[in-house]
Length: 67
Image (cartoon, rainbow, N blue to C red; front, side, top):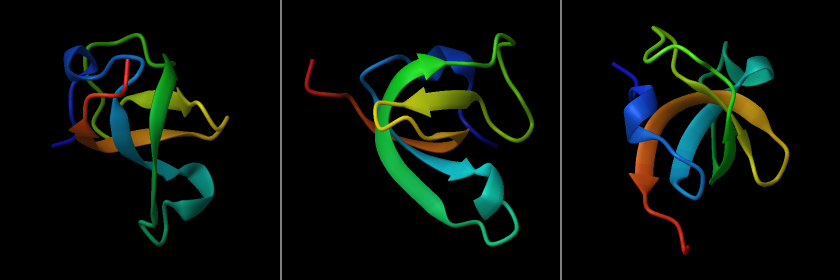
């Protein structure tokens, strides 16, 4: 089960799966810039935008950010 919205906030390092990577399951690691999903949970993961500009659904929380 992917992490819930309460476990994710800006500045946290996460692994996401981008739309084009869903068939392969290829993960992208980055720092959360913004949460895009409003509901407390989502079966495929909470959608976020990373500081790099990439958008995807969170599959795992890696750890707290620098700030």
